[in-house]
Every structure is written in C-alpha cells, then in structure tokens.
Amino acid sequence: MAQNEWPKMRGPITKTGILATLALNVVFVSPVFAQDSTGPRLPMSTIIEHMEKAESALQPNMAYQLLREYRLSGPSGSSLDSAVTAEINFRPPMSKDYQIEKSSGSKRGEQIVRRLLDHEVKASSSDHAARSAITRENYDFAYLGETLFDGEACYRLELKPKRKESDLIAGEALVDKKSFFIRRIEGEIAKTPSWWLKRVNVILLFADFQGTWLQTNMQAVADVRIVGQHTLTSHIVDYRRSDVVAATRKPIRTANRRTLSLAIVEIR
Image 1 (cartoon, helix red, strand yellow):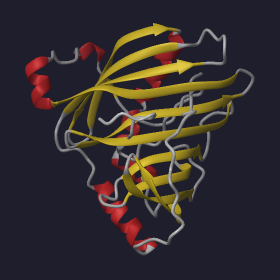
Image 2: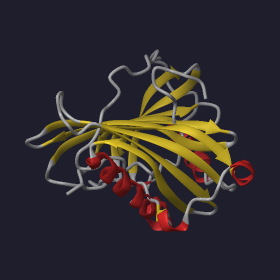
Image 3: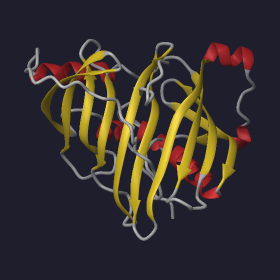
Image 4: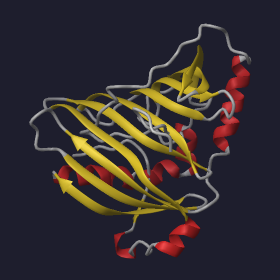
C-alpha cells in the first residue's frame, strides 16, 4: 500500500459506524487537496449511479485474514492510552470472526475494541448494510468540484444524511473518477450513540489489497461530556488471502471467536 501522511482507505462504505463512547482522534494532518472549480464532466445523476454500482460490487468473493491495530488515547496525561491488535477472518458472503492477539495499556481500550468488533456483524447484515450505504436511499448529494487525492482525480461530493442515524455521516466523500470507488470519507456522525458523546468526527480511508477493496484506516475524534476529547485510530498492519493463510497460519481458536460487525458502539 502506498504510504501517505494518512494511509488511504477503501472499504465497504456501509460500515460507517466507527466510534465508541469514548473515542477517537481525527487526523490532525490531512492530505492537501488541489481544488478545481470546474463543473462535473458527467451529470451529477450519472456520477451517483456509477458510484452506487461500483460500491454494490465491492463484496469480496474470496476469504481473507487481516491484522488490524487499534490505539485509544484520552486527554493529555490520561491513563486511558492503550494499543490493541486483532486478527480478523472473513469468509464469503458475509461471515467474520476475530480474536484479540495483543493488548497493552488501559483495559478500556480492549473493551472498546471488542464492542466495536462485536457490532461489526450487525452492519454486515443485508438490512443494516442497506440502511448505512452511501446511496440515494440514505443521502442527498451535492457536487463540490474535483480534486487530486494520492495522485488520483476524484469528484468531491457533499454527503447530507436523510435521517439522523448513527451509521450515517454528514460530510464529504472523494469518489475516484475512473473506478467510482469512494477513496475517502470525512465528516460528523449524524447521530451520536450516547448522551455522553457531544459529537464524533471521523475520517475513513480505503484502498485495494490484492484485489480486495477494504477500509484500511480510520481516525476519529469524540468530544465526551465531562472527561473531554478521546481518540481512537485503526489501521491494517497485515493482509493475507485464504490460500496464503491456509499454508502459513494456524486457524483462529474456536473458543476465542467472536462475530464481527462494524457500527458505532457505546461503552458504558
């Protein structure tokens, strides 16, 4: 994967839920976008139609395994800092499981990661996926121009949720002009999952891993009442297809398997 100030991320856009009640750190240094004030080369309706078709075809048809690292940090001087590494298996069409491989620092970090992963399965269900997808069913769109992201020309589209739900994001998406895949999403979650969260801002990046389009990185910031701002980040540190996994790695122990899901979760 090409390295940036911010690794790029492509993945199931239906999985926009990303924060737990304590969470997260938005990127403080984001890629610089060269803005273009010219109008779209395609009608807006055509851009959206192509984007929806591209995203609907993103469901992986091959099993894979990945290693994802999470980091939680609280206000300066806080004892909440922690790092968690999780191994995740995917099997078509929508089966996932995971195990925590390593955890250090505050135990709150592992609690948040487990709840985040436990909710991922809910977002992968067909009904939930449809309600959180970047489509005209869930969003109104506005054309904001064109820009370069990681050297690729992209359309800039404003995302305006049609409902106040925690799986929808009010913000902006960068859509690749060639593939019509979404490369980047940035914005504020339309509805926070808890009274404790005043607002949650997220940045999601997406990229291709050996033919599989995945959300590779997430960074977000949550303003938590009373205790202040918290940060949660995640990124992929390793990826292997099923044939490589079978040849080189032991299967995840059944006793440690948990169903995955990607959604916003509340840490009590």
